[in-house]
Length: 548
Image 1 (cartoon, rainbow, N blue to C red):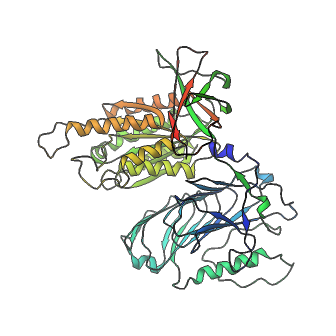
Image 2 (spheres, helix red, strand yellow):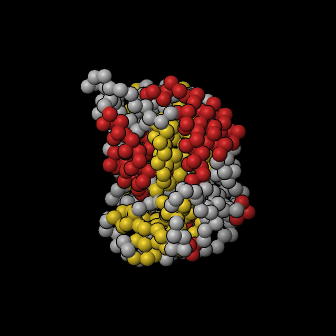
Image 3 (cartoon, one colour):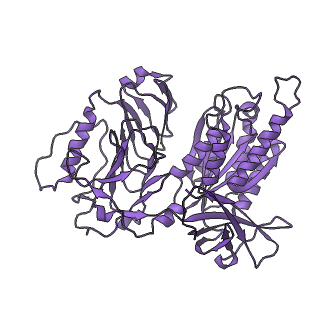
């Protein structure tokens, strides 16, 4: 929701154009990388090419198909820059008014990059500090540097994953099984997560002298020059796969006056309104029914969406430990959840134990979801709950439709292997950091706690205090995420809890406002939502945010 609203703002981006073909390249815009190194790139109209380079800033260029298009009209390329995140987005449009837009980016090695496309190809050369790359139906190629230091997870649901000789020789555990690869290169310190729904994923190695990058730069310079009809093309190496058909019109490079600057100071709230006594939700409310207060000061609602607006939902299932023995029950409950969702909502399913597995990307095809649920198998490894919930939040950020609201529904007993006497290798992400990420998530988080408690017969067994802590943390995560917490003592009751979650989602309203306090000092801003016309109504949602 927030990203959709931001794309409507019309301010022009302050950026300086590079001066040299041999430097940034003609037509490139220089953008500072935030201190956090976090970058999010979305392109819904074409492909993305990324090169890791030795500079400390980001360089951006784009080529738009469609000769004769006037410049300076504000093409759909949004750049948002804060202290914590650089966002570059190309939004979707009606087919008749949607020329292809291909992005080229050069990013520092310190970047923490998340990039995705709808059907465009992803081509990445080099290794940033961390990488998440996803395409729904395009192909994905990653060229790793020699002696790469990374832990790589690559998955294609309906395509293939292939390894170049250099990657295969360098990696540990680098075997492809059922369209999925997990490999450790060097010390494995840089996380790399690659996903394609229907495309192919290829991992190769860069030459030691960076020859691939030189080839790309030559191709970019050729693309930036005006083309002469019937002029001979510069020779380039034959691609491993045939390129996607290109538009017949002469491409035009995007100038800096065509980049839209957006300011991410809107705050979006997802609020569930229920009756104080019965717990039943209120439907049919209007914008005027709500009043928002930030640190006691009333705010003006700038955007409102009714409870009927669609959601992208992610069902996150814990299949570790004792739950692995009751997979059939969990499958049946998941099918009930899918059946209960509204027709306008899309659903994704991810399972986890020691690793995460995408059972289905977001889809409204209920038959495909049921087939995917039937194929659910218990993941291997210990319980990395905190890492897996963080993965789900990141997955929704890069795969959910910005025009839709977002929600994550977590089913777990809460026993991460980092807790006392819980065996195995636990999450690398501390709980306190996970809670902060949940608070900052642009969506809702629901948690469904399933009891796996047993009597401890020795000090080595999980003690009652640990079960209580796991329970309380799941409840705390739901509060931080603006959702609701549900308790399930027996897995047989899980389907009923899911149906209550879906019913609750049907009472969620979305409101956005621009804070009157413009300071970004990192302090907590307390939010209170009131419905003065409905004395018996209670609004549940985010309790605040950090003004970063």
